[in-house]
Amino acid sequence: MGATGKAANNGANIVTRFAPSPTGFLHIGGARTALFNWLFARHHGGEFKLRIEDTDAKRSTDEAIEKILDGLRWLGLDWDGEEVYQSQRADRHAEVAHQLLESGNAYRCYATPEELAEMRERQRAAKQPIRYDGRWRDRDPSDAPEGAPFVVRLKTPGEGETVIEDAVQGIVTVRNEEIDDFVMLRADGTPTYMLAVAVDDHDMGVTHCIRGDDHLNNAFRQRALIDAMGWDRMVYGHVPLIHGPDGAKLSKRHGALGIEAYRDEMGMLSDTVFNYLLRLGWGHGDDEFISREEAVKWFDLDGVGKSPARTDIKKLEHLNGHYLRESGNDDLAAIAAPLVEAEIGQKLTENDHRLLQRSMKSIKPRAKTTGDLAQSALFLFRTRPLKLDEKAQKLLQDDAPALLARLLPDLEGLPEWSENALDTAVREFAEAQGLKLGKVAQPLRAALTGQSVSPGIFDVLQLLGREESLARIADQAVEEQD
Image 1 (cartoon, rainbow, N blue to C red):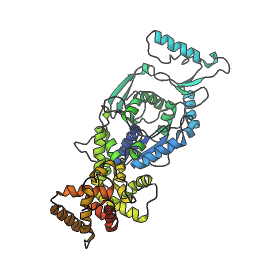
Image 2 (image 1 turned 135 degrees about the horizontal axis):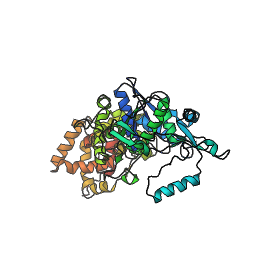
Image 3 (image 1 turned 60 degrees about the vertical axis):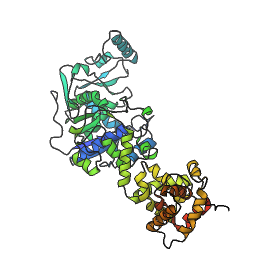
Image 4 (image 1 turned 45 degrees about the vertical axis):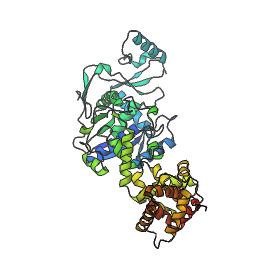
């Protein structure tokens, strides 16, 4: 810690926050930041708060805000209390800036844009760091022309050093001469990001600020403001950013960046993405599948690594397959239903929903995504005559139609339509024909589903039921001519 300021928390209730800017979707990196904050608060029995940093009026939209809230809810990251909107707190931000002016910890800077541009050009030419040179720090405001516009700058410590004991990065030290007197209020009286964040964190009672390490430099500026106000210090935890599989900073070329894309386009479950994000930069031994309850029990900042985590789509799909198999059939059917409806162009009936639920037991073992669930279930809701895909057509060439014609009477004569009865009938038929089971099952699958891949053939027969199964087989069966 630096020379001034009080220690954070003092044994009080832990409060974390997630503070996204609503200029687009909930980014995967932001979602992980929210997750780490949520887990840290829940692990310690504290509070997790949400602040929408919507001060960029041109880029912030209600649609983007709703996408962020929807993404957090989908991940199961509930926040405590009402969300705070930064744009509604501008008067409070300005109030703090004026308090700092009155205490002598801030000053009015009348430097014109042209003067500042000339200053920066001179610094570049001299190969010096580009930062404000403090030209109005100790000048009398009366030196400025009457009515001249001004900004309000924080008077940061000019000597010594600031030390931050970061919960992830360790001890980080910066010489105070490197921290410029940054602008808190613009010439139009609006607060800057640096002022707004520090004030909001204090007023929300934030004790632990967990965020991406691209904000580490901001921490030194915000610490200077916090100390100037005499506020309690927060504990910082700056988490390394997420990189692509090639080690480069995550970008559009690496694939999906928004949480809704993981859900809607990639077909991932909420539990999958929760587990996947958790393990991007945090680990607990060799544990791969970590439940929400275990995550809350185990999570702490000492498990966060100092190196950037890399995305791994194969690992993501592997996790999703696991969670699909572990999920309840009713829950999966509810996810698959709208996807099926979109494919067939009509709403499912109550009977259709029940059929979809029954089918999940057979479908989910092979599925990797929620899209796979829907695609694998489509055959149940196709109308006759089925449209056959290219591979199914090949399976029904040559003597396959005649084979189905010979099989049909055996199935029609079954006293009961059960798995055992169907299994016995088809196997005995194949044996009588001198064929392996697959030689019968494959054309049978094509006739029943219009596809070459499906759940187990006896599951298919049971799900479709006697009447529909026999009708679909009859559509493709052609008796041999003498």
